[in-house]
Length: 124
Image (cartoon, rainbow, N blue to C red; front, side):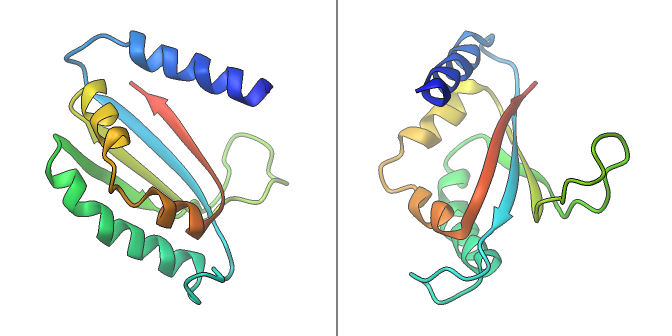
């Protein structure tokens, strides 16, 4: 219940963000070791998701501007293990992101299958 309220508050911040300004979504990804449904690793399944998602991104004013693996925590709790990957997507504006979320055939299920945990963080 609390998580759902927090998600609604976060979506409200995105909806209230000014039109015409770029929006950045930071994806912090923790892959499953093995995805039972695909018989592949989480990283391989996520790669399948990205291949399936690219055509959707091509219909939007959006692009992946960074994809890489975290190496070390410079400032912050060093005992926490880092997750597998960081992906940053730039959208021309909030409406481009909302269009993506509304696309019926967008492969969100494949993304979910690949991940044991994730964070999607709205940035400006």
